[in-house]
Length: 420
Ligand SMILES: [Zn+2]
Image (tube, rainbow, N blue to C red; front, top):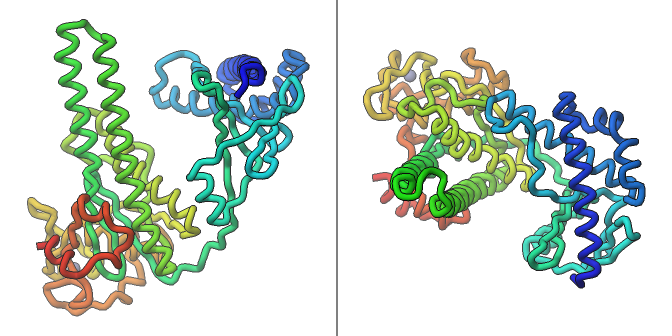
């Protein structure tokens, strides 16, 4: 962008930042987290502060500030806020339908304190993919200044009408710290994710960097900080890729079968029996976020993209009770257990998946025995669910499923080799 045009946006950013900073301060001081209340209390003052600014920036700044205050106050409540006030560090300017419009695919017009400015845009592949798939642009957008390359980065929002279908079946997903058990067509696949192992690995690497560097340079030194930054970038990218790929695989299978996805309803914090071996509460929380919450969020987001419905059920005791007899399963050392009534063997993840399915079918999400239990064929043999289903999950290592685009891409022979 020419220097002179870019300067207009630098001025705009400065004013916008100033407004947001003041609004956030007011919101946090008075416990305001709702945009409407913040606007009611401060709109007039904000308008008089910069009368030359198009009035809608006052609206969007209120929305921006309300969201910042909301998340800050929530973190504070949870005891995770480090400072007394939130810092407004990076700013992206929120826009609405009055502040910007696209003129075809090559020009964008933005309202500023110096009148409307037209900017030519460069499209990227990601955007074209959405446009080609029938997504439509909405007016919600943000713009961020890239001072180094003197350009604007525009963040757009797309929407698409999808009719959520009436599910013909269910795919249940039982998230674990290092694997994800998925019940598809009567088979339980155990997709390795290693999310807990990766989190732990990076945790110990950071710890050893801490110990080595603090001895030489003192705590919080610049070289150590540089290494931490690189490590956390690597960690984040790797986890994101794992979650994204697996979520896509699962959601595609659900869409192909017109099935709904069943997930367990997780709390805000890890449940007591999750990751018992990890004592450090902060580390437990990190793993919970990475492996449980993060994985579910990826599935939810993909499901939204494909119009696949997601159902949540109560996860209490889903791996403790036999899906056939409703009796307790007594587990040994590994993940195998024996039904206390029928005497059949179960794998913990298979039990979890089937019980999630039963709860989804029962529709109550509670932990009372479901009437639907009788609908699952029971043959009474030592192998549960009869010859039509496996009682042992089919383990799939990450290196293998990461290359799949669908389950159909796998020949049975490949799977057999994996499970033995
Ligand atoms: Zn049983």
